[in-house]
Image 1 (spheres, rainbow, N blue to C red):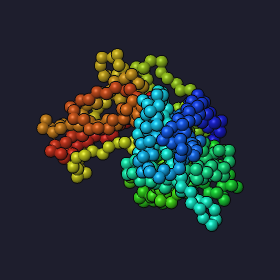
Image 2: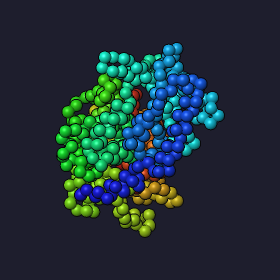
Image 3: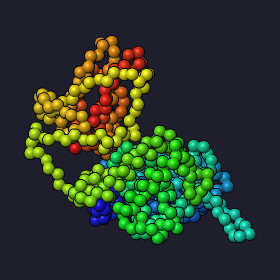
Image 4: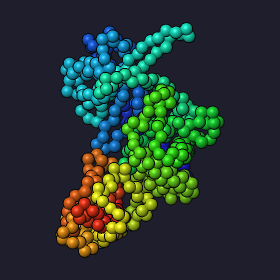
Length: 454
């Protein structure tokens, strides 16, 4: 089922950047542009400014807890005869360093400077030089951003890309493309299972809109259908690539948005798009209302729709439901072990028990993949025989927005003993694995123990 109203409320109440933050942004941007226009460095060469990135494309979303939202603003300036590319970054930095309001807020980036505000907002200012050429068919313009690290100009055309997104969005009608992009970015941020820069994600999804066909098709008739259409088309597109493709800027040849990706990240993204496409299709096609809501909640989390869940009156009598491992995603930041291996390792038997924080003894045995609340302690014990000369390592990999916001995704390999204790601090699916190593050779390992904290 579609649940169009539930999609609307998820978007407006949870995903979209709230009006308070938008108002702050819309007040701050003109103020910083005035600093540039009034500065000694740029007063004579300033032309105009243009919101870009998620802010300019209208795909900006509310940040998850502990993260910032940002606005990219391109500052168009005349090419200065005496400046090198790095000088544009250095001089715009200096303009704000000399200003009493911003001197402690400004810092360098490779192609821009950033202004960090007291709360969860920052503004990136990107100098872009403009060169005008005269020709028989009229004047033409060349736009370049400046790379401070390489001291080179990089060809670009930010307003042309913004127009490309706007045209694609117009084709889908009712802003269904940019709404779907927001939902996809929200999915990325809450799942923390794949890595994809917003400009790359926007390009991949925008490229799925077929201009001539979708002007008359029903594939974008409402938001749930639009989201389903885009993720399925993207899934189909990704399956045609056995290795990472180069995703080129659709309006600027030679500029590639995959510069922050590698083969591992691409394959991981491909895997999870396929997984989530299956979940979306299952939720969309489900005819039972309650079952469909639960399936959409598997995609977008518990803030989709308003569904009451039954909780036990006492934590000690909590009924633990076993999760199907098909529904548990191995996170993209999961690290493979570093030891030599011939694939013939023995499987370790690990016993897991839990208790409430205030209890003294671990008396309740936890089944793998079970749901457990916060404010509990876990005890992992290797039951298999381990030689005293061998080393035991534990790997704990957390997932979810709470762990990410507190910089607690973890994933390192820690030397330990047969017994290890952990606490249930962050909501999400977390993975614990034990390894036995001798002289840098992996001898034994446990299965991934899935701890799902509700």
